[in-house]
Each structure stands twice: as structure tokens, then as C-alpha cells.
Amino acid sequence: MIRESSKLKTVFKNSLRGSRKLKYVDPEGTLGASSLDKTGGVSKMPKARRGLKEKLEAVLAPSELSLVYRSYDIVGDIAVIKVPESLVEKSRLIAEAIMETHKHVSTVLRQVTPIHGDLRIRGLEWVAGERKTETVHREFGCLFKVDLKRCYFSPRLLNERMRIARLVREGETVVNMFSGVGCYSIIIARHSKARKVYSIDINPDAVRYMRENVRLNRVEGVVEPIEGDAKDVILERLRRVADRVLMPLPEKA
Ligand SMILES: C[S@@+](CC[C@H](N)C(=O)[O-])C[C@H]1O[C@@H](n2cnc3c(N)ncnc32)[C@H](O)[C@@H]1O
Image 1 (cartoon, protein in one colour):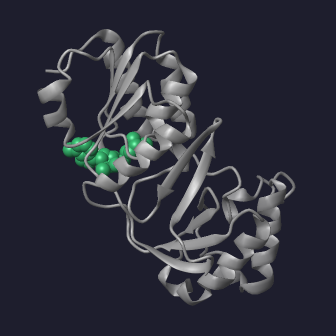
Image 2 (cartoon, protein in one colour):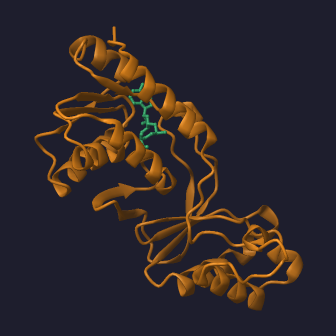
Image 3 (cartoon, helix red, strand yellow):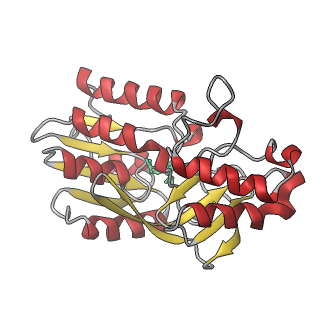
């Protein structure tokens, strides 16, 4: 059984609560009406968003513009957009506007399925730029290499990751049950004085990237990637070792 301390429960509950209420949108990732201030003006929009809106106004009809999804993710140099069915043939125009606005974006992918299955992966189609799905994302001084087609990754969780890392006390052992490519584990290792972070994932691709990310971020002595079903791994080798357990429920992500 996993040891339950009050500290552990706090991280556990807060982690779940955080992921449920999460509405964070990439600060530069808002396209449409939600960017307007209360008077309907655009004066408070960050420059990049305003620029993007203007670029889209030049290529889309107002009725089309109103259908464009308001947010998109930028992971490293890849932008991931969602496009409603009625605008699919305009995907390339939207993608080009994003690439012109965010000069560091070299690829735009369209999300074509929801995040699904145990591995929490989404269907992606290339729209513009370089044909690739692998990138390196930077967050709080850490680097995360990821293939977006093979692994779960959300840039929107950055504040939650740092919030969790700040709870970890010197010398503690953390078990991260659903680690993906290792973002929580590595942020914890780099921004706390944890003794050990056992970092489990069932997706072999995610664990391969996690191993690479552990090396990239020089946390080899602290983060230990483990491939397997978290339940089995914990029962077999991690009983009663944790001061804290992270368990971001996969099906809620
Ligand atoms: C929502 S993702 C969270 C990833 C990571 N915490 C992050 O924020 O980037 C859930 C992860 O759980 C993994 N997963 C699903 N079922 C699992 C299981 N039984 N044991 C270990 N990992 C599992 C998936 O492969 C996926 O990477």
C-alpha cells in the first residue's frame, strides 16, 4: 500500500483539484472574442494576440473569424491548433498567421481527435511548416523533449507543476505515478531539494523521452524513470518509500 501522510494527501488532493479547475490558456494563445476588453476594444490585448487577430481579419470573413477557436498551445516550436469542421479548408491560412505572429514557431499541427485512451494521446495532422511532431519545450529553466504524436504533453500545466514542486521539502522522496515525459518530476528535481523522485509511466515512448529529459536537465541522481503500470511498480518495489505521491488522474487530463 502507498503510505498516506497528511502531507501526501495535500499534494494528492491539490494536484487533482488543480487539474480539474485548470483553465489556463497560453498567454499568447488567444485568438478571438475572449481577447476583447469589456468595451469591445482591443487595447488590452498583448501585442502578439492583437497582431494575430489583425492577420486573421485580413484572410477570414467576420463570420469565419467568430468560429476560430480562441486558444492554441505552443509547445517548443510547434503550435497545436483546433479548427472547427466548417473551417478546415482555412487551416493553412490560420497556421500561416500563427507562424507570422510567433516567429519561433516552425510547425503547425491540427488536433483531429480529443486526448484519448490510457496514454492520453491526441490525433494530430500536419498543417504548415516543417513536417515533424518532435520538439523541445522550455519551462522554468528546464527542457522537455517530446513527440506530441506519441506522448501526452500540456504546456498549460506549468504553474501547477511549479506549485507542486514548491511543496516538496528537503530530503523527501516523491512517487510520480503518471509521469509522461517527466515534467513534474524534473521540475521537482530542479526546483526543490527532493532526495528522490520515482517517475513511472506505462507509455514506452514517454519513458524514452523521460530518460532523455533526465539527462538533458542533469537530474540523473534524483529522478528515476520507471516503465510500467504504476500499480504494479508500486506494489512490487515502491511500498512505503514515499513522502509524497503525485497521482494526476489520467482520464481527467
Ligand atoms: C495525463 S498524462 C500526465 C502526464 C504528466 N503527469 C504530465 O503532466 O505531463 C497521464 C499519463 O499516465 C500514463 N498512464 C496511464 N495509465 C498508466 C498506468 N496504469 N501506469 C502508469 N502510467 C500510466 C499515460 O501514459 C500518460 O503519460
